[in-house]
Length: 343
Image (tube, rainbow, N blue to C red):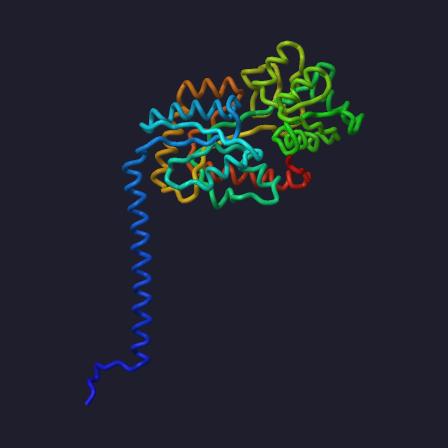
């Protein structure tokens, strides 16, 4: 007589299936535990070697200078050198890719800019990375208002300039650092807000455009106060209005766009720090804390002030992430509507 404990073939199949599910669940749970343990263990020893800070623009640029000041201050907090590495090319895409494709261990971080994290998303039909999927924010760094500079032959006020531009559609020119550059996009945004038509003249960088502006060969240019204010002091260009909620200490006599009669427009750039997606949360938290300490230091505050920038810190990684998403929601549709082909 067979034992009553003997299972039927169907029962055995069910047992095998249940056993398989349990093994898969235990395997997944074990993997999650190992990943969590690895993150905690890494955070306990992080950082144990130098950290690479990738800057997507050349040495001597405003972004490069700010990054080097941050690197010095963050090194003191983290106890390891933070070494700036310039990876230029593709309007910032080369440097962005270097961060997005790096190992997510906290030893490669990047300075992300509005060009990299917003404008390039709109300008390029395809990118070798996804800023939402492949990158995570550490925290916000700074915001820089852009000034509308005019040649010395142009009107002295924004209202007079707009009136002249409306009377001569497509006749007044504005220079830029190239098709798709931030100075180009902000110039197009200004033209739309002011209800005017301007002639775009692209250059190979804002430096060349500023030279022609000061010589009267182009009428207008959006640039930083760091570049424009010295020429204005020499009487070679006029500063008509500056982006931001309040006037800059670099040019206290220059009104904001709102003060000058164009409250619906604001020209600015911004930057943040980022890491590859998948970087352990405790590591990101350590980097965020070091960044916020650096931003509060007198040395970095002074550097930002001299560049016409304001600190956006302290911030959390989540706040930085939400800020970038809001900027993309604002700018990407507009930039795509322009049909710009990046150089």
